[in-house]
Image (cartoon, rainbow, N blue to C red; front, side, top):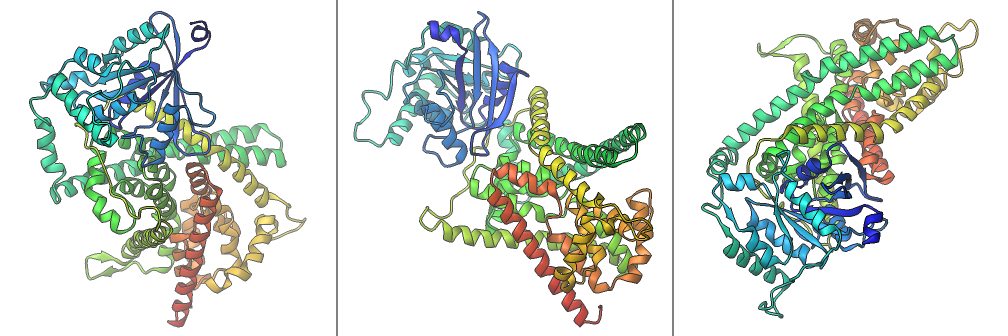
Length: 633
């Protein structure tokens, strides 16, 4: 075909989640792939290029996993529309490659039949044939091909040559694409519902072509007896999550410190090479420091996603979601919300990015909106400063430290607040969806356990790094430069004695803000510190040091110098009010930028900003006024 030879043939990989489709995509395309989003939605679009043994160039699209074309999620709707050729701006695929799990044909064949009913040229790739053979499952591929009326090949996505049969078949089909030779069987009752007919045909094909000694593997059954147990399973999950939590904190720290040190060294080198002036300040304090503030998040993100990808590839992640679904559902979330929220204790940015594993769009939005309430590590410098300055370092009951109890109370307050907000959102969504079917159940496939392939993990981590730097970096860098401008200009007049920040636009804004924040007990110094704190919460400590005209080499030294001064200058009510403020206020441009990118909606980002600021203001106002009434003012 002249037209086919002139341009690359467009293929689309389609299949159920957990069928090994993405692993097959990685095997076929390697590093020749790019990741973006489909126009107007947050669903991930992955496209790659490959070349067959005969030298044919092909374009391969990895479609989101789907259980049915009766779409129950945005992912399934995108897959359905692209397969049918109806998706705006997306060319219809020339050939569909439907991937099925050889160890779970009872579920996956039903969707393959639905794909066949589209009447488009199609290949059935029976993946994980090695695992099926180890379990004693016998599959007659010739019988399947004869009965389905489409080419059937076996693949093993975790082996280097595991896609050879598929590539050979694509070469054979490239000259002339044939639609399926058969559709629904002639003996099907014309009056029967299509769903019943699909299930009946699936049972017929299984009886003809598949011999399965056991429905599930013995290893899977043995592991599930422990990992899905209501008590033992939760204990295992707690241990796994604790290890992830510790790794994100401890493993990322040396890498983040190295990035910060490298950024500081580079700022020094560039600063020494440039003459004094606004351009030097922009390059060093705005651009380089801004980029460093973006890249410093990468270690946490990559470590977190390494665990998430490994758990997902191993088959454990759906089981964790199943275990926690009932508990999370009571708060208006789902079991899939647990890991994103837990990871938000390290940083809300990777936590929000991790919500991509949540298929239901309403659950995903709710999780994104409450993720900033988790007490991220950036709040700790502020908490440590204020607790050390205002909370006595004494024992309580001979076992606990009062300062530690206050810190623990801040974490508990954040968790309870997140559950409360999620519950309110659940009730509000129920009213909004009163005509849309109401609540929905969590439907999960529990795949067989398997060892994650290093290639897929590395490709996945590379994709996440690129996505983070591209999607979040631009916004953060632009806003960081804007903050630099507000903090730098105008310069203090000749002979000025106060700190330079007091004369800048940010300083003037801070003085004007006192009219709004005075009921919370915030003075003008606190208001000024809140402005650069928008870039990152932990900047508030060094900002307060600058405002109070202190000179410190780092945040730790600034905190040591600030502690006695704040204890003398602020009331306990003010300190408690600021602590409560930091539980809720979205003082992090990175988080807001990530919400915008992940939801593709200014409205959602604006709502998150508004409700978090409103919560922070009301909670701080109540805290300050009650504390003053009790004599702490």
